[in-house]
Length: 154
Image 1 (cartoon, rainbow, N blue to C red):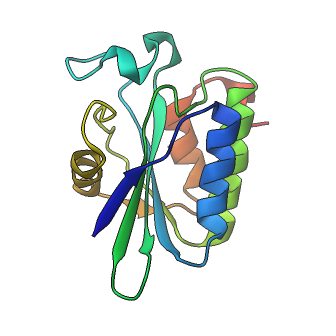
Image 2 (tube, rainbow, N blue to C red; image 1 turned 180 degrees about the vertical axis):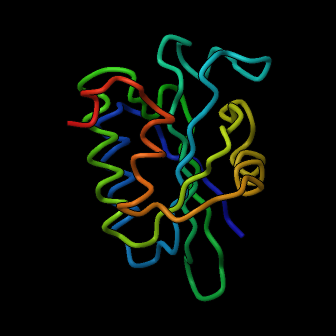
């Protein structure tokens, strides 16, 4: 097993990275999470500013070579968020691509903040959360966990 964390540069680059993972044939599954809506004891400065909560986190699973399992964690500083435009537009694009991929899932349970953990610890923490398939019928439920602004998903 090999685990890595996506390098964070900007939300636009992060959105592109997640879409690339969704399109990659080696990716078997991408699970989306919404963090807590308020800072908790697990919230550290490296999670970004609490005005951007909740954050999007992802865990991609796939294969590198043969039986070698690969996990990619996306949970870093302000990785993706949907609290306002144009950020919510990026998340809409990502979740639209996720639904089309047929290999996306999400957790109805809010994820703890994990960017202060090692990539391996973060992946294990996120893997423990129960998930359901992200489909055209469930995507609105996931998006509602990220933003309650009515026009955020237009």
